Each structure stands twice: as structure tokens, then as C-alpha cells.
Image (cartoon, rainbow, N blue to C red; front, side, top):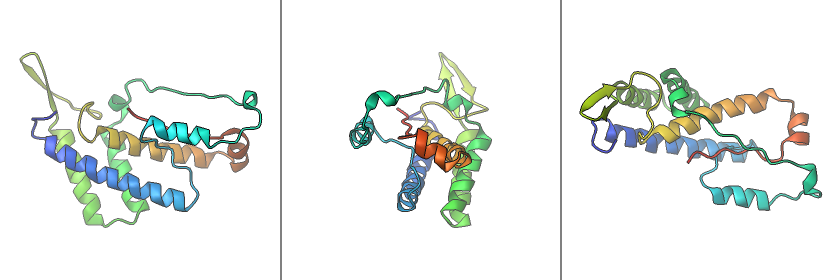
Amino acid sequence: AHSWITSNPSRLLGTELDNIINKLQKHFLENNIPFTILKNTDQLIHNLSNLNLPNITDYSFTSFDFSSLYTNITHQDTINAIITSCKFLNLPIKYRDFLLNLNHFVNNNNYFKVGNKRYKQIKCVAMGSYHSRQIADLVLLLCEQKFLNSLNNTYIKNNVIIFNRYID
């Protein structure tokens, strides 16, 4: 990914999406909304060590892994995530459109090489692009919030102690 025409726009999009994710994190924490993204495993260890569980055998630790995460996030998912995030944060429409145009350019000019042949990726997010993790974080964060909001608050308080996600 380092030498394609989309490399620098992808880097820029990743940086801007990191800024949005940081603003969302700040907003969530200020409003006592669980922020599910972990930046590293140290954060998980810190979160777990701060738990006060009277009888640890009454609890279970459950983890999941995605299969082909990036190749299951569609271009429409990325568009929706950018629009929803910008709207939620009341960011200017010009800024939202700038991000959408960057996203469109990167997605529509994404090529990869196998041997001596070049191929154009025509759907989903490319693995290895500089903005792929941020897109996945944003899309999944919005899905998780929708899921958590759909649950009864009593259910969450009684059954979910910690809910985090990490993309390596």
C-alpha cells in the first residue's frame, strides 16, 4: 500500500477518522456512555484490574474474533459511518463531504498486485490500507452502540460488566 496513488489520501483519511474517533470517545466518556474501542491490550488489562468482582467464579470472560472483517465492511457501510459520525458530532457539512470524497477516491482507485498482474478491488475495505482500521473501528462502534441501546439497561447492568473491542 505504500506506493499506490491512494496511499497518501488513505493516510489522511485514517488520521481524520482517528480524530473523529477521539472526539466520539470524549463525548461518550463525558456522557457516561460505554466506549468500546481498546487501543491496546494494556487498556484491557487496566480495565480488568479495576473491576471489583466479589466472586470471580460467578462471571465468565467471553471473546470473539471476526472472520474476514475488512472484506465484510461495504463501501456503503463506510459512507454511513462517516455521515453518522459527522452528524452526531455536529461537524461541518463541508468537512463531512471532504471525508466522503477522500473515501470515494481511495475506494474507487484501490488496486493490488499479484505476481505481474494488477487487480482493482471493487468492493469492501482493503486490508492493509492506511485507513482500514479506523473505518472498521468506526463502523463497529456505531453497530455496537446500536446494539447496546437496543438492550434493556437493567439487562446490561446485571449481565455485562465490561464490553470492549480491539482490532490489531
